[in-house]
Length: 215
Image 1 (tube, rainbow, N blue to C red):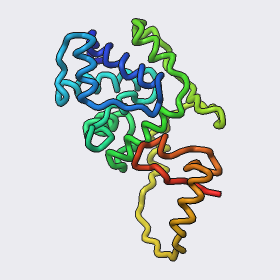
Image 2 (tube, one colour):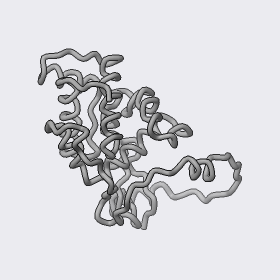
Image 3 (cartoon, helix red, strand yellow):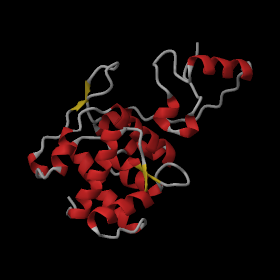
């Protein structure tokens, strides 16, 4: 693993604090740089220097078997990370190859949102040596989901189940009554009637008032 220094540990702690505070909470590159300066006195430039440090943290997350916590660092203008996040994550998440930067980030944020066992990462930022920490083996998600073991697919399985061919489908849809929909959301709130998820809270402002199913 690329060597970790005090600033790298401090960045890891800042991001973990964000996870504990709110799994949907994010921090911009500029905000992170300022917080690091405040805590350590060190200046970490937002571009190459910060990307290098976040890359090291990605490597740690993978070795500890937890979601990639650096997904919480976003661009102020877009609300999600720059292309460097997906590029670095691709080394460990080949499924991101067919995704856009935004889709890969959304997938990782969903895992962060569902994950409950952050013990390995917490041990690491508290000074336990990486080689002395047992990686997480359980993908412990929210209480309304069943806990399942995380099993990486073998090369053979990956080759057998490649998806993504494009089909063109033409169909007719009936338009919703916009006013009726707004009244329904006003009464029931923008929460899925099936899974009780608020997409705006999970994915951010862009998904406000978007719902899986509505009564």
